[in-house]
Length: 356
Image (tube, rainbow, N blue to C red):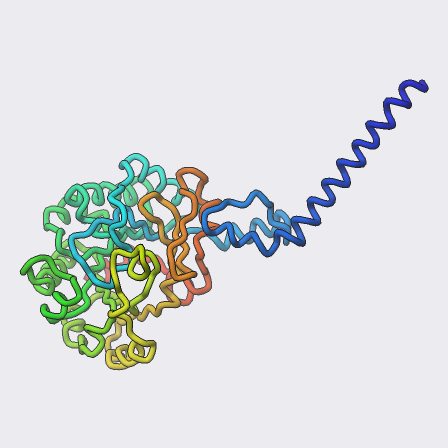
């Protein structure tokens, strides 16, 4: 008995010591790591569990970070050279189709309802076949309510609509000016082809194949004084997204950038003057720099969420490696800003039956 008691004492001391160590670790996590955890959004995943709210707090965070609407920039390559572009051709990488589909399935399982495919120019890779297969997969296999594309329109053929148009809900075409000389100055051109003529042709195809037609415009020093009212009303898009020219370090500003967009930047007052001049256009939806930085969930070509809040694009780990819920914590996404710009609304082909 005495020998057993002698053995038990050190064991008890070890247990007490371990308890003290665990307690000190919890205090350290609560006090000293609390302010450091946001640094992980730059791609370093934290192993420290949330200390405010416990399991219920984790549940609230996960609910708030549901990826309802996702913008997937699956390629950075483009045939245009827009001077203000803030997602430039820094790589030529494109995921294999099977891996891209796996990532989209992960997003859908996490709550995604809207997917928007962009680039670069999304119709450039494999002459639009890769994009078409992704669109088809999202609508037919994942049964997403809303599938959309943003394109410069230069690579789109009617045969693509014939093959994949039934699976597409919305097509947004970028057009910054209705003056061809201005488009040439901006870099939104390919040779001598008319960007504006092509815009009208795609508008007709969208109407024929029951695809909602949108226009995106980036307001900059070359077009800020233009009055686009008559042209926009004639084309009658379901939405005209008007963006303020945005600088992103490493993309269109800074030493490592492929573009130098400083000369394209306009002031907040100039942007507001442009909006006021076009206030009679009912489909106009303005997008300030603030909204653009944190109200979009952006996936790059590796399926990493990009955090733009600090004026650059800080990537998370890929959702293919760590899953959606872990990667999205470092996206810089602000759901309140997302809701303010109407991002919660799901626009689908079913809505267009009332319009056409």
